[in-house]
Length: 224
Figure (cartoon, rainbow, N blue to C red):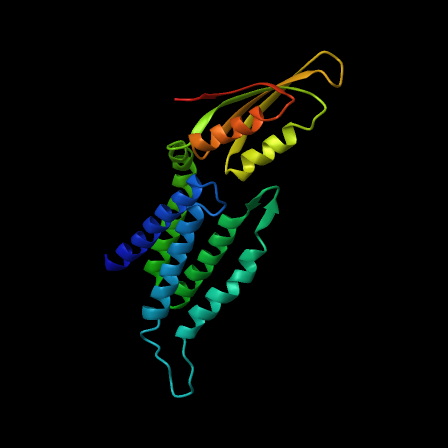
């Protein structure tokens, strides 16, 4: 029960830290931090208690050093799973699960089958449950709504708008564009479903658009 409590505490606190990162729009969120914390806890358990039946012998062989070397070395494997995608990063959770798998391997090698099984089960539950729960939690405290922009074409307005949303930690969930007339300098209406980290960030985007001379109309309808 003490072992289970330690692993649960690590996963739970990792989730708490990760949710804060998710709300801030960062790449390494609840799932990543929970897996990393869980892996760190298991590495600690493996190094401290996993080799009690095989202490350092007269030849200077210390099996507890294995856990430390694996923890550092597996980082190179995990780094290979992380790629930059546009303004974000993908593969961080995958890298964390690779690192966790190494911890499970160390614990199994030390004979800690129960600890390894518990950790693997907790990791799967964290990854699967947060995949369902996280979108619901992210809606709390964030500004979701429809951003309407009407502007004169030919000024390159949409590019800076999307970059501004990304820089503020927001995301565009859906976008629709409608042009009036056939002229390349005609009027364009853009509707964006956006998720911003706060109402203040949404207001900042609106203010940026209102300052552009080509913009004829802008509004943000907040979802309840």
